[in-house]
Length: 161
Image 1 (cartoon, rainbow, N blue to C red):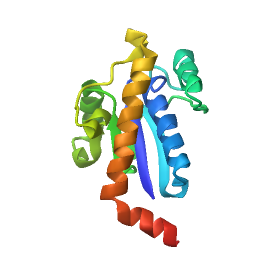
Image 2: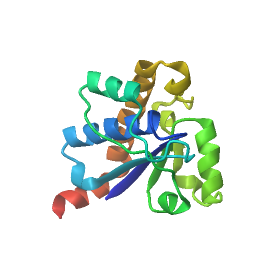
Image 3: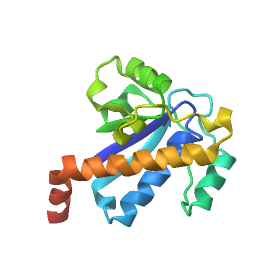
Image 4: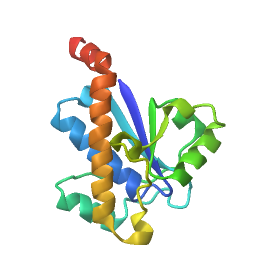
């Protein structure tokens, strides 16, 4: 099983969008048994809150259902996931700081898998939830393609067991 955690600042917009988009992509390919997918925020500002309504509406327009309650990432969460996919440079530095710089080999900006290492702009500030959705979806698709190629043995194992 491959464990993936998506991370943004508050865990009410970008990272839950990424979590739910990625879950749908995995489900569409029948790969659910091969994954544990979650999301976190680097801060505790929104802990306990649901997904931000404009983010939820954007997902619903794209036929992506789901609920989410915000939670802050811990060092244990970082250690217990195979991949930590952050939305921007600030998230990257925050996760590295929380981990004590001990897990840098598993921490990536989501857009890095598209060949473009740019940040996914925070729609909390830009109000452009469709642009965030598009950038996140592209990153999730490319990340899944990467896993299907680079971690093929994990999926083969799951099919046999």
